Length: 408
Image (cartoon, rainbow, N blue to C red):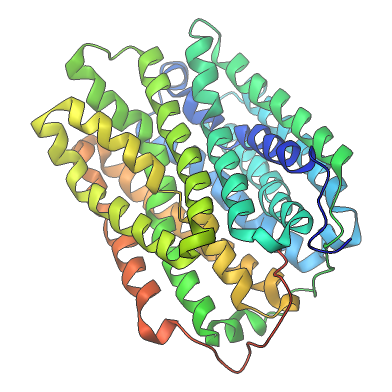
């Protein structure tokens, strides 16, 4: 099938919905935050540790997938399905088997490893069906990931009287449906086998100017993104409490609204990228979200309504650049190096998130909403590096090539 032939109408919507459901595993612990804090006497710092353990598992998982070429040695749809089932099981162990923070951290780590077979492999499958519109396709995919990440907050709002274990169990059920759906759809006709990860190429790839600019911009973006998502319910509570809406249900609904805004931002950014380019979308996202890191707490001082509005805009733009960084990196590299390039970009980026999550959750009790000032250097420095002339252009490793293929 040529890149100009139409794909079956159900494929992309099915994959996007599957990504949405699979991503529910990521922040399921945060959605149960009030109940967990009461049941286990946890602090915001402990909740940060639960998310950081997922990030650490994701890093280990992406390296394992890249080093073993699992998504090439086995059908990518089967790898996605198996990962979703493992993640669902680990999440259930957390819900019904963990007896405290220590055992919960182990379960969340395994969930993170499983997510490495959901997010990157899902990205690879989507682009294998539609490589000619990679920016828009990844916009839809990351939008679904964002919405799915916030799905447990909606579940917690709808089932306000449910035990927290049931909120987590619903995320596991969503992941099972996700895996079975992708198994049924399978990979597209443009899925090329990736070269086994070359450790030397992990350094050489940074000599590609366009890749270097996209990767450095992505690193700054990641310093902000997941820490902001961890802080989302806390920031929402800070805005709603002065309005008398401090109940957990309203906080969960508001937090879901932030993720919904992010999903819409990814889709809109992907559409704009077809006409304005991925770099421009990423630059504007970094500029506005970085500014809101500074302005957000000041808006709370002026009016909680202003902070509520800013959180929705912030939620949209904090993640709308993410698919565009992946699109830029995949375009910049020779096709057989894309898997290595995206793997190292993801691994470094997620390692950065652990540092920012730990820093901001540790200081929340002292700084409150002003802790977001510590996030501002990430997107603002990322913007400078993305647009720097030395990080744009063509180098010896680049060459004329067909449409890009996504990898892990």
